[in-house]
Length: 408
Image (cartoon, rainbow, N blue to C red; front, side, top):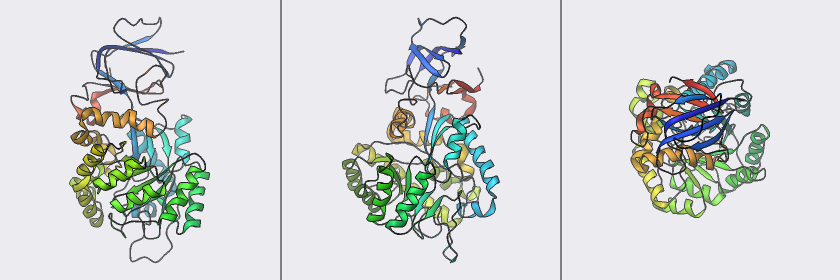
């Protein structure tokens, strides 16, 4: 049995309470056994970590990432890399995500359940994973990465971001295949996107009947369908079809927000990728068509979030970082804080993400009985939300009761 006691901490437990000082947190093996104040007794033989007033909080939860989008040009990625190289680069992204403070994460399309299982078995370093498998896309849709000039069949590759399926029966079959291979969600591409060369973000993709087929396949095994969306029409169609979660949603309007609220749809905006790619996309070498669309989507992203907040939607948090932007996932918190405030952004990336990913019984807050996923920061993020962007100021990363990083 191992015992670790964090004492003299400023505790940000992410239950919604304000930070409190002084606090003591006792970790036994991989479980938080006690959360108390300065008078909490220290068990004999325990390792004592004197926090010196630093902020102790739960590990961050990345609600929308892509392990396999390590290049700026998604259409070239699987063409130019052997499968073994793709796995190696995915593992590098996984470990780097953990070192940014994300102890749990959702891969929103592109990798299979093997990455989740390898992390759970301790074979690789990375966040505790959930996966969507390959996203479902129509011909010419967001995950059909053929150029407009190409007439060859779409790439059906296990490391492709998606799989092309047209028609109700084909969509149902494709969804069942991803679930058969262990996907935690069914993801559909319900609108065009920035990384795809043959469509525009404001389009609508998949018919209502096709969407319902994907939703039904997921619901039949107790899982949910989530959807890539930008346009109001695509989000409204998703709500009607029974999709429970929409991603991005940069062109959200008030009517759409009301419809999503009525249907109980969760909203997961991803601001950081648009911000950094709009500013540094040319430097990162992303194609012109990609950069043009990213800039358009970025212009509306904060406005969309403000509309969602006003409508009272449940708001998750993901960065959707790709290519050279992968190391900058925590920029998402600072951007969200411009609309939601620092505490709102932090809760979205901890407690709320744990709830919408249905892992709130295990992680997301610092409470007795939860897994010991903990960060110790030099500064209070409620006062300086940008602290996450300086890795040197993340002194401790503990995942499942084990030190990933300790520089104190």
